[in-house]
Image 1 (cartoon, helix red, strand yellow):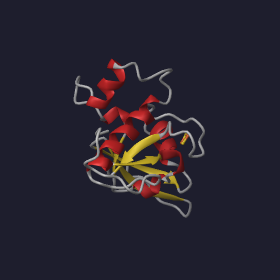
Image 2: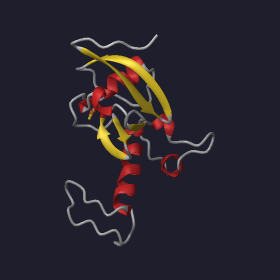
Image 3: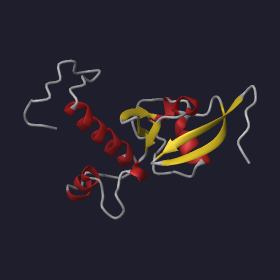
Image 4: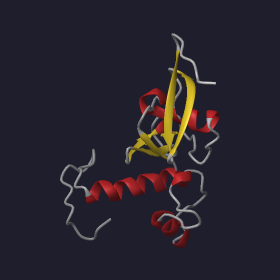
Amino acid sequence: MAPESSPTSSAITLHINGEKHPLSVDHRTTLLDALRERLDLTGTKKGCDQGQCGACTVLVDRRRVVSCLTLAVTAQDREVTTVEGLADGDDLHPVQQAFLDLDGYQCGYCTPGQICSAIALIEEHAAGWPSAVTPDVDPDATPAP
Ligand code: FES
């Protein structure tokens, strides 16, 4: 049965890790809660739930976003990548493997957000996109991220 819309909810389709997920969401539902509570994708973690810690970071169209401050309805028809979608079968993403090899996960709770953020940072740097805090990003700078 197709999800229904109402004055306070919308039927949307989220594209997550290459799969389509039709669902009806209250307009106030965050992407984080849709992932964790509705779609059982619990790799993305809720830390502060107010945009400060980064534990909930996912990729939307390959850009990093804090999913606790992103409304699920705004992710409609965009490609969402969570930590569950980074590996290729049994082969971890190189950033995941680096975290594992170099003991970078500490307690592990916010590691999925750190990994998603690191992947996006590397891609943004390669594309020459400035960050909010470093407007003079030089894609040829050394050492490379
Ligand atoms: Fe802390 Fe989203 S849960 S930034």
